[in-house]
Length: 338
Image (tube, rainbow, N blue to C red; front, top):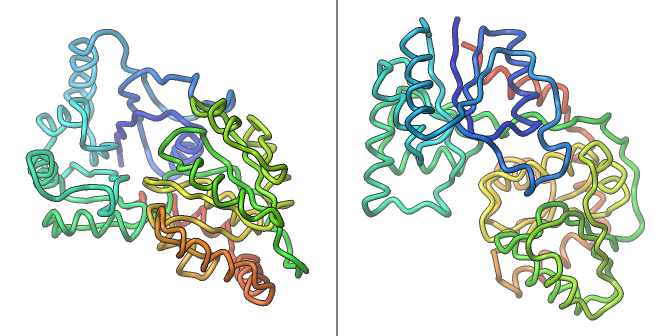
């Protein structure tokens, strides 16, 4: 069965997904644009692509022509479009039968309006597909709000990360070390997080990553309990996750949050804002951490107190230790297998 994927991101987690899927399905991936490597770790694009693929290059007209040429000359069973907000997402709809068109949606109802012209266009897009692949419950809820009534497959991820052997459960005596991993950019809401941890000198916050806010963030730190570690290769992150007591993600908007999966795989409980797309399916159910209302200091303090309660903390650590990430990976891949 021939499947064609269109994708913008050639990140390692998508490459791993396509590699595993190619062992079960006949797939071909079309990358619709070049990717700016400067905004990510040096190994973000790592991994051999053991599947048929092409990268569209040149002017927009040339890329459209190349995309259409592939679609017209391939006998496919399913076209899986990675998104619905660019011209290169819309073009395939014009050259593929509706019953063969599917959509991977990575936005949720929390940050997406269902009113206005943009919402109308998204509804129109959805009317031309017969299946939606949704990372989680909030994503599925969005397409339902748009009136989509056909098949929705929830796959609980946006790709495959570098799974490590799950650490065995061991009780801890105190909750002190918090960890953030990600880009240092405004949407991650790090100034707010730094301000809160500046008031909790009994706790330690380590920040891994780089980005346009790096110098600013360093300039506003005036306590010695907040540390910047810089960039760390993806393959080296396990040491930091497993040493930390809690992974914290305060994002203003986070359509999924692969780092949540990484933290859990390393046995690390999660504390994240309710704008993190994976919070519903990986943090709240099952109970693997706490979720606070974005930018709500009072709620953050309440959830901080909760996760610092050592009995509750060890309870969720034990929950996490029971997760089967080998089976988890299989379920992610199988969501795309007919």
